[in-house]
Image (cartoon, rainbow, N blue to C red; front, side, top):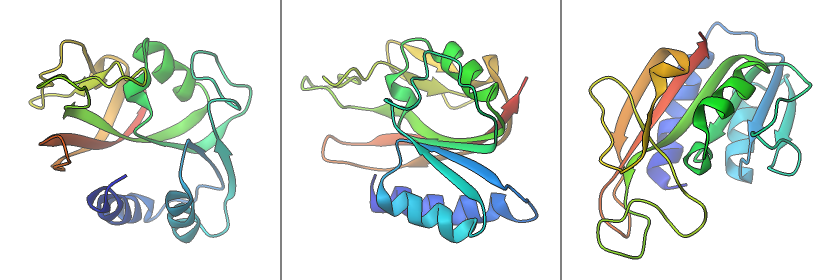
Length: 167
């Protein structure tokens, strides 16, 4: 997570939270700073923090949440449609932040890293240059979508943050 990511989370999540009453919230692989921000936005919610060991997104999950949030998780999805289906079967609303384009590989221009990173995302006019990308609108209804540039040590990176619901 970059400082710019955190600024985007603070602004966008606070905006999206206005007028909502999410009482049961789950996060997927959040760091402590992200957890504290969600606690500030939803101070009275019942919050569950999942890791890959408590919720493997390749499988359906038995619980239901008002809201699930994931940041920089879905670029590890070998089967993104399945992951979206499993998350959406477990919540009413999903807030996701991930990659459109980012060089993470050791070779010049290589999008994917050596840590099982394997997916980039596209939506409407925001197209990934990666050899493999997934169109968000094929799996979910996108209620809000924001695209932003976030340069890193390997060059430019393009991210998105979206609020989505089940199709």
